[in-house]
Image 1 (cartoon, rainbow, N blue to C red):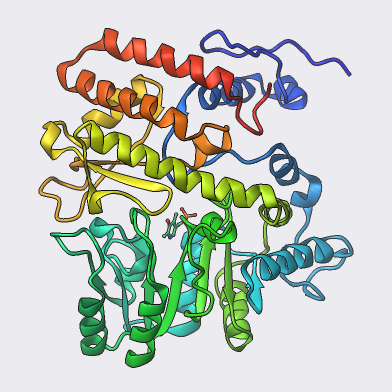
Image 2: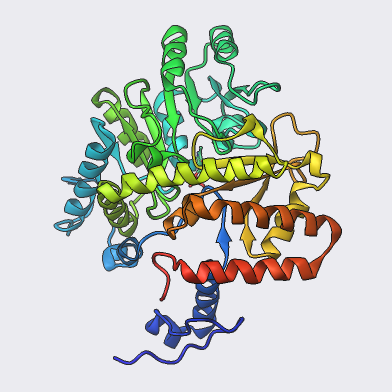
Length: 435
Ligand SMILES: *Cc1c(COP(=O)(O)O)cnc(C)c1O
């Protein structure tokens, strides 16, 4: 079969072949958008710490006819016939999750991280119960009981933070709050935490206060799988994770636990919260877990952390202020208050410079959540492209120049960075993108 010529709008591409012949023929408008996104992901330095590049194998699995199948229930216990293959797909994903993370039980059906967490509440709490998690502006996730989330509306969310002087969790403060409030469920983990989470300390606190402890490792699951962050498994009741961040799988999630909680979790996911699982996603999760079990993935996880530490050092050398003073993982939170540039202005300038970040609150931010003081960056994506510690000085330079150019409105400076970024990116093709 010959591939029809690409009909992409957008800037001239280094690669113009379309990887989507059927889509291009049926819906050129949509195909053009996909092509433009492929070129954007190829040409930019993607620093959003919750993003990554999945492999071609993961992409292929998530675009299969498994998507045509309804499979309410679990392997061997379905409400629909015709599950000869689907049961094996899901069992494979479950078995691989159990082996990779060393858990007794895994549920691979949650549609994403937020529904996975909602299923945890459904399994272990009643509406109105007290639950505890890290405050969103301190680095926690919406679903850890924050007010605007269903989890903060339907439960009484009490929130811990980090210390203003260190940017670190104060475990004595967490213990005090837990003993005072006696939450049913405690969440540890977050979306903007640059430091190692002490799961053992949380485990003690949960035992003392009689709470179910959930480690939400959405951001760091790949680091845990690759041995670059301690595992929560010995210390917690439930592990919740997305599959699409450092774990480098499709957009999805998993809940893992000891056998003791297996029934409660499975019942909460289905029929408690969801209908049919997304089997094409389950298949892609299985592939990602297989990839994450290879020795090369251990190297990847350690390289992500090494790159983040090198980038943090390079930023500190250039006078940037980092929340907690650095990083232990894949993520860096920059407080731009000393640069006198709002996070949003910096993020938008960097985006024009081909460097994709997100603006973010910093702990004790004096600015508003929609216009905060910080930007959040991370190294999972650039490490997937093969960039190493030797490149981090250049990345820090671009960030420094981009932030300064954003402040002064120097669009020529921004265009120059964009060209330099594109040149380096062209030398490090991303997995999963058309060559
Ligand atoms: C990303 C994230 C989630 C939510 O995942 P979605 O798939 O976006 O719903 C939950 N918890 C934490 C800690 C996260 O970082």
